[in-house]
Image 1 (cartoon, rainbow, N blue to C red):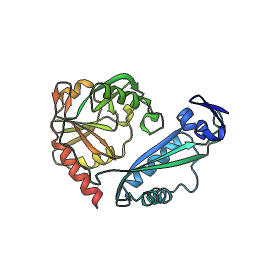
Image 2: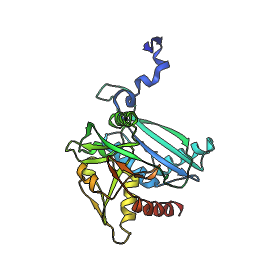
Image 3: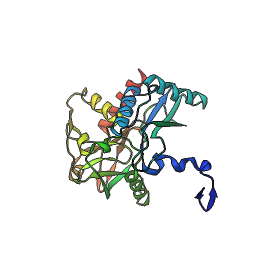
Length: 278
């Protein structure tokens, strides 16, 4: 028996109480965008998920092929009649048993899906203000580059942003350098340079980040760099934007007393929409 909110219930009625993702953050996840029954950037998502499971020493089931996971996700969108434009999250977690040391390395998974309004990537013409979040810092390590179910820094940062009337916050690592935003990777434009922090700084190995880097290299007179960004550099930037696979690109318009344009962001967004429509 267990106590749940003051009520004594049986262990069987509280199955999540044994879930290792709940108890220890022992899980990884991927969030994908579906457009017209197609998972965007499916191969990149699949291989990142497999790599994440290997990092956590999870046992990858024999049936966990890319085709299997694609079918599982798409069939759920069809069942919910939202296959035209949706967002899905697949969470993989180690099966129950043990404390810090698992009793086995086998896994289970759950897929959740919700509709989204826009199938195309678009940018809203409105103010988008950010600031630094300095209560906690990201470590420069491999675990920071994968999507585990431990996102407490992002959660507390989101609360901080809400309390201070901000749209987002910029996260720093333990060297006090810029890592990413709460909901995605960050890019900075300075003159003819497009710069984003390298993975070694602790940022997520983002799917949209990869696409932006590839597309930007095709733009004339733009030098694409993966370099350390300090908070001081943000003040000197011409443009800042955040990327993730659901939103695409979100330009930052205000950081403290600085106002930014969105020229390169709009150009890249056009290229992303051409890419996903092919």
